[in-house]
Length: 372
Ligand code: ACO
Image (cartoon, rainbow, N blue to C red):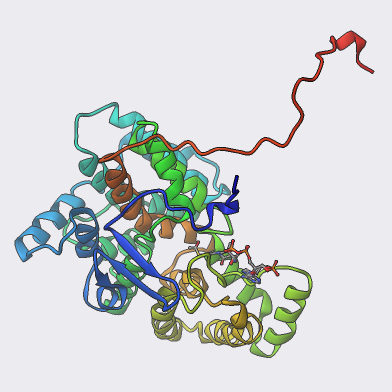
């Protein structure tokens, strides 16, 4: 009886969505390299690729963009909830509850799973931006159908149209976060979906798993670390102390990548550009130094920067507050979650692993009044 702690090296399904080469540091969606998609594609085109399995023609893309944009508005009950919920809540808790409410609003509509996936994906940026602005006592900025997904997201968040570089940086960051094979949150979605529960419940499961600092919240933890370090000169001492205290370097290490995560490599370049533009170069320099020291100390164990190392710097520069970073991650990963759910359900089998029992059996039940 073999126990695979953390389900390491356990395969639960076949997939034609995402392939990771953890030794070489390569990532492919539907066979296309992440390096090409990040440079040449957009959120909408890559979502289409992931959901439909092929790149769209121009007319297919135009139609798809329109369809996605039409679903941006939130039901009144969710706007009401966002207005009433406490302002110091964890944004992932707020997002999780809002998606759950979407399920209630949906009330078993007979749309396809893909229709539901498109609707959830289109609405998540609105939920995030509305809660961000309500927390700051700012007026809500309603979604605009004539803007791309990334443009509209930043427009609703900051209240003005983003520059071309801001649009590009968000598009790239969203593409990079879109899918990642059988990570913890995707697996959580599949466990829920395999019981033939509904897609909203499955996504709530995914959000719950992504919220943890070992997964999707490592981005805000990494940025907090850079801010705490304060100056480039402090990096070495800070990291050594952190490792001595058995604390992890956030944004470092990965179950699959034993080299540089390609997503971190791509984000590094954009983080450099956008932090310079926003006057946050000092934070970038701290991050770069943490990277050097971290690789020197941990690289031999196959521990390198992962996607969360530089993404926080990018999200921060675009106007997101640190506790919102995992919600931005969610806004992209929901595409992968829903694609993986649909793929799994084509040949569903209830996910039900086993646990090896190591306790006693056959004990005598003692009535409560006789227990010492
Ligand atoms: N800093 C320092 N040491 C580390 C780190 C790190 N970031 N990551 C792993 N290690 C060490 C562990 O201490 C352990 O050392 P030991 O064998 O001497 O005890 C060894 O590497 C193996 O660690 P595990 O936790 O067993 O490895 P696993 O594959 O389960 O971990 C994980 C992957 C959870 C991502 C880990 O690297 C980590 O905690 N990183 C920091 C959090 C983070 O950045 N998470 C985001 C991951 S990417 C994503 O989810 C989107």
